[in-house]
Image (cartoon, rainbow, N blue to C red; front, top):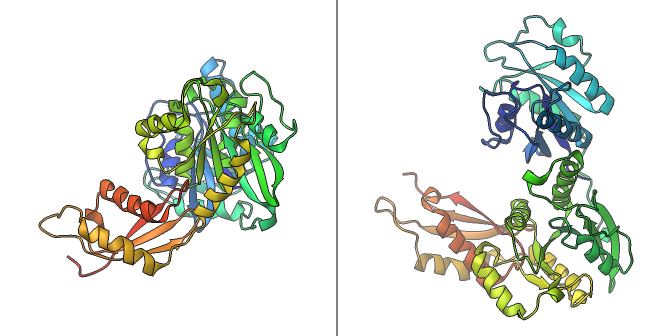
Length: 438
């Protein structure tokens, strides 16, 4: 079952972004006293009490606003509600309910979504000045919080996870490997899906953005089951002007969460762009295996795959662990090798290395090339173990984990890859402190 979605809706300057940052535990949304700072929808996966969900921060909702930008903000908030399993309707305790709050409640009711009424800026009190002002909306007991101080945020999160639909259902093995097909509009995603399926299931058009939803298509290849998830094109945020674009963007990101392997399509002629890199980063942030599909390869003349790969990885070293696959959805050149590569990458993400083997091979290399000493004290490494798969996850025990910088962490991951592969799969590395206290 898909990860549930929770959206924060409210008038400008009631503290939505502050609450968003408080819940996800980092300063992600821009917070300012100027109303309407959050223009588009910001979303982030988070969890509470073992329950995972997406949290969406929306711009300040002014239902009667005629200005073009503010109309767009209202559209984004409405789309967020449409996608949500639960809406947090937020009000300001200092101003009390405003006339526009009544209009916003009616809009929420029309969406027929579950709602929690959240009254913010209750910094020093748990008693509302006039409770009837809030109960008249018919949304149940208001939850009184202070997003700035963190007051009662735990109670709010308890209420959220109690309402959310269950996500514990496990997918049957027979459903096969789920493949998310991602990329900018008009890069050939639907054409690739059609070529793999051998039929015109998706609508293909030269107009960018023809696919507006994520569509699942089962496929059997030499006895192996796959599920192709064709997603809408991911545009640059600056070019997303209407509700449909915002709707499809969230759907595509949710498809990444559902996938076992992600195919990120790149136009061979234009090469990798900033937006391609952002899409790839979205996959890496979700710790999903990834293959970079260089599509429309038939249109690029006079360039070999080897020279293209060499320049590609030289310019984008962070992507070196992820294989390039050269093809043409139109001519189907080399397409028969794509699904076997998907299966190989899937197996790599599920691979487990015995602890004894890890320690015999990796620890001597780490001890031979220590990270710099801090305060005259060297870091001692005790053991390395793999504690999970999908993604391959490792725990390294040492005496001073805080003294290990990102450069050395990348060195450790690089040695794991050198010896054990994990081609196409992100690797998660955690440090555990062991030994005498300083």
